[in-house]
Length: 116
Length: 109
Image (cartoon, rainbow over all chains, first blue to last red; front, side, top):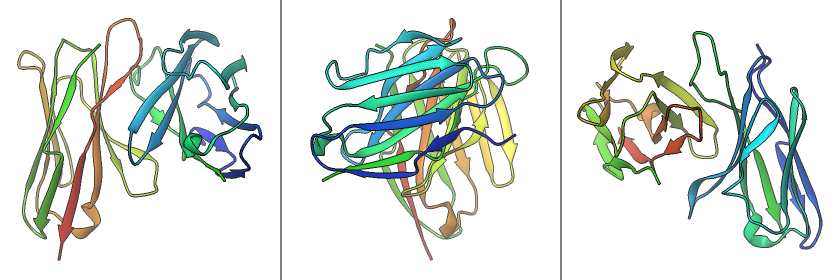
């Protein structure tokens, strides 16, 4: 079991450029979550998929941020026209919806985005 | 929204001392998890404990749903225990998980 895989681990972009972050959940997990973490704001929820369908995107900034889950093996978080305030560690987590580990969250290592 | 309060916000211990971290929540839950995070690191799951008491080495987690609280006890603290401890709650229907703001623990030799 490889765990949740996030790529890239580090990304540096210039202001105004686009950044795409990838997440591969643990095989068999039906729920995928995206969070953003900064020193100032702490851990912030962004969006949540269940069985690939978007369930809750209440934490996503309405402009410039979008997330997709085109198949059960990966999800992407895209930030258009990046701004310095988007600099953060973006964390992906998955969770099974059945079986002995249901209700548990498993996090990836995170993708550190730096916008210059 | 759901309220998750962690206390204390920060804690400094001398190596060998014990620590008690608290997580209080506003409504009943069906999922409770404690995480550890080293600066710059990811979240490592310590316990999945929606009710009762669980032990792992020097760590003990106790969740009392009726009292809407969960605690994490660290005995004989070590410098390597330094970091941030977060609790996360989940609710029926597998909606979002709700995180506390964390307890920052520093253990000095």
